[in-house]
Image (cartoon, rainbow, N blue to C red):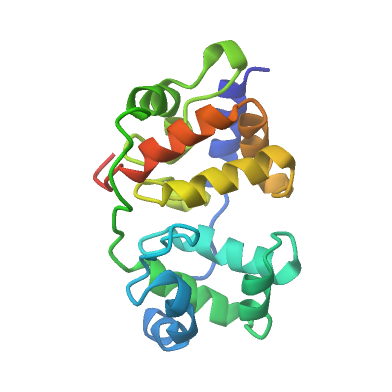
Length: 206
């Protein structure tokens, strides 16, 4: 079965799975104060090692907080931050950050733009790499209902690091199987190129 067919099947299945309980934005804002140290007061980080989370999909944010808490996603700093959160806390934080306006991390490296755009929009057919647009959309806005993240405007350094972690199997839950399959086929140069291109995408109607 081709990567394209796998992507379509998985996306359809996730879109059919409802996100059952929305969070309270106001309460999430009250809980967000400790988060600002790394993610910025408006959810847009000034450190390229830490992700922008403003405008990120509510379902995705909640699932990542859960993953840090259960240890499915390994990060010592985040594990400490979520340790004492209950399920409603995480839903409220997710709702709050999803309500914020996303920024754009920076300009695309002109030397990497063509290669990055080619991978993002067309994949690498010869290597079995599906186009990123299949799950993340033409403008990088993601598929919030399915839990596929917004990637447009994300820091290139952060995106590249996550792709390397997928490639190394360090982000290895079943939910991330498609990303592992994609990243395992990417070279360091290809990761840098597509990460740079993604950083310059603006959120707009897909």
